[in-house]
Each structure stands twice: as C-alpha cells, then as structure tokens.
Length: 158
Ligand SMILES: CC(C)(COP(=O)(O)OP(=O)(O)OC[C@H]1O[C@@H](n2cnc3c(N)ncnc32)[C@H](O)[C@@H]1OP(=O)(O)O)[C@@H](O)C(=O)NCCC(=O)NCCS
Image (cartoon, rainbow, N blue to C red):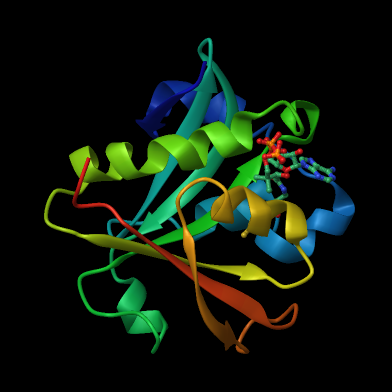
C-alpha cells in the first residue's frame, strides 16, 4: 500500500506541497521548517502511495547529541507528518508498522530508534504504541509545546 524511500530530488516538487492542519503545526511545523533541519546527519525519508508523496519523516543519526535520554548510536524519528488530505486513511500506522524493517535495512549499524510525542497528541501516540514503539514511561519536558512521551523501538531484528 505504501512505500518508504530516502528523499530523492525528483520528489521535491511534491514534497513542497505537503501540509498539515494549523492546530497540528505545534507538533512538527511546516514542511519548510521540517526540511531546514535536514542535512548530512538528519536524513529526510518519504512516504509514497502509488508514487504520490503523502508524507515525510526525518531520521536523526546524532539524536543522542540533542537528547540526554537517548543512548549513543540510537536513531531519532522526527518530524513525521502525513499530508492533511491523506490523514485518517491508515498511512500513518502503515509507516510505523514498516519502520523497523525499513530502518534495519537503511541503517544497519544502529539498533534502536527513539522519538518524542506530545502528550496532547493522542492520535500520533496511539499510532506509535499500536505499531511497534514502547513508551519508556518518562516524560521529556524540553519541547516548546509541552511535555512529551519518550518512545523507543528495537530495529536490529526482523
Ligand atoms: C499522526 C499522523 C502521522 C497519523 O497519520 P494518519 O495517516 O492520519 O493515521 P492513520 O490513518 O494511520 O490512523 C492511525 C490511528 O489514529 C486514528 N486516527 C486517525 N486520525 C484520527 C483523528 N482525527 N481522530 C482520532 N483518531 C484518529 C486512527 O483511527 C488510527 O487508529 P486505529 O489503529 O485504531 O485504526 C497524522 O495525523 C499527522 O501527520 N499529524 C500531524 C503531525 C503530527 O502530529 N505528527 C506526529 C509528531 S510526533
């Protein structure tokens, strides 16, 4: 149903059209704000449905430099969004269900992926919890939009 791929230049035009609801902006920001965080250590990946770009996320390879709770060598899953037109269709949960296998292939030297999700964002929290992430049971209080759950998933096994 969906395919995950590292960002490629041919998709840039479609990527720039991705948007979310105004009330969701506090959780990830605009697509411009997402892309400005991408560099050689923070990699953009896309969610494709029949070659249509429906979402994006960042994989942060130096996550532990930013977050004290994260062990070195773990990856960070950041800035995940599904375009507003495609939300509620099952794409979000399909991404998380595929993430372990995808990251296992793309980042073979890493064994864990971490994320934070705002406590006021139950749709995203449930999407992670029901599809492979575990709640660490501690809150991260450094986010601009309020406390966040810390979640993790092992990726070194199929
Ligand atoms: C969070 C997000 C990625 C989920 O993607 P999605 O494609 O809309 O989610 P899905 O359609 O796969 O649904 C996932 C679950 O949430 C539920 N859900 C989806 N939209 C919902 C809504 N508006 N209200 C309540 N529940 C909802 C679905 O029922 C599903 O639960 P289920 O497993 O019981 O069926 C998407 O809503 C999004 O981009 N939100 C804005 C950005 C954001 O908050 N990102 C997360 C940052 S940590």
